[in-house]
Image (tube, rainbow, N blue to C red; front, side, top):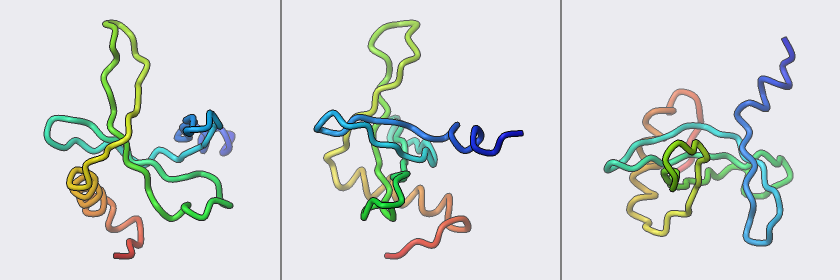
Length: 99
């Protein structure tokens, strides 16, 4: 079994505001108030934000039968904090969280 392929299975590539590809490690999907949010970790070790997770809302496909997922940024700090608290509780034994 090729370990590199297994590692790539949880890598998500998104475009930043400048159109550049940015790779993230997919950590989890958290459901909160009927919506789903993805928790991502920057995959670039050189990134100074590599110890911070990114939380994006999972938007349902616009067309029926489409399985293309869309992620949108979350501007509400209350939602971000609530989703992050759920994530921290769920993964408290796997990550060392710094408050």
